[in-house]
Length: 356
Image (cartoon, rainbow, N blue to C red):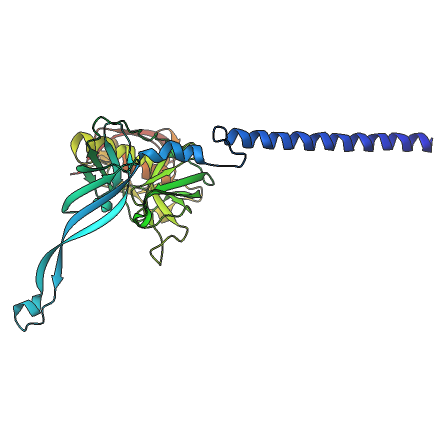
């Protein structure tokens, strides 16, 4: 009996080892297959994002801007100039990046790249061709600007734009731009946070640890499929260089701005007329109305102070969802709120007004 039991145990153990061996072979084959799929078309056996970069980089341009600035020059003379200083107009040159988002020459960049009192904007295309561009519209609220360049008879590919609301923390991303005027460069990182707030009432940000430096502003933040998900805008740094905290304006915000700038030359924003205090959220994260402006669209809809917001346009309420609704609403847009008041659930419809 013991001999029979021992033989049976040995057979089970041997079968287990054989199973592990085949499982290991299968997993190795699957790993190689996946690697080949990710690098298909570039002839390499190592992992690479070359396909994504090759797809997006022709649409990323270098921008050089000349701005007229007033500098105060101190005079050593003991006269009125020595008290108040002498005004002197000077030309300041700045550099940055931009993204060609249509084949007819529309370019998206940051407003701070082209600055105020602009004299001249030069665009260097991906093939080295240098042309002039003009301003279509700027939006200081989001720090975005749309330029128009005459591409002539040549055809340049425009970038494919992905919905940034689909981006998740941990996604791999690539930053393409013109750091320090060196020309087109690529860096890699991940999405460290979404919905990041930073001194901007009209846009939150995608946070990334991809290296972003001076000159990257206005350039593309893309996903691993080569699609635009953001415009690189801000470096959070004590040194002025990359320290692993870069902020990009989400593509969903940019699309909202682009359409207005092309159509009107400015952004027309909606106004709802109520507010919440982010520090006064309930334990479950629900939003409590802290102020309703008399005569505002919110007031006319019946919204009241201390109402509890349960849903916004059919989505469960959250501060990020409300922020997006405020920032992206247009005059005439309908915002649907589900609220709780005195244990009663009420549906409200707010028709957005216009910020004057």
